[in-house]
Amino acid sequence: MLFVRGREGRMTRYPPSVSSESAAGSNVTKNHELVFSRVSSRFPMAPIEMVYTNPGPSTRFAELRVNGQDATRIAFPSTSGAVGAVWIEAPLDRSGAQNELRFSAVCEPGPAIRFIALE
Image (cartoon, rainbow, N blue to C red; front, side):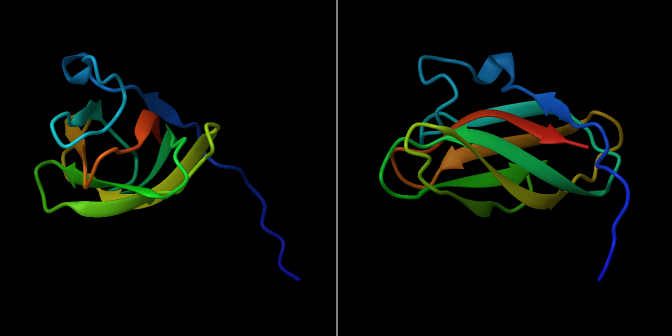
């Protein structure tokens, strides 16, 4: 048996940047990137929680670009209208709160990302 003691650090929530808000709101579409600016983490390879909704019956996909690097495709399973979360790890290579995360839809419709959270 293995006992693990401790707890996760405090998570910082990041809403979409004001410049990325539009009629699409937090929905990721091909013509509406969702941008999270001034993001920081205490880890260079940061665990990122993405809180979203996907009311559709099938998985929706979005691409994430961190600081303009190559895109990573992320699956957002159906939440049947409830709120869900997925986690990934991504390299945040800029010091302090200088990182930028951009989400764009692979196909329409994309997920609605409410916020991201990092430790």
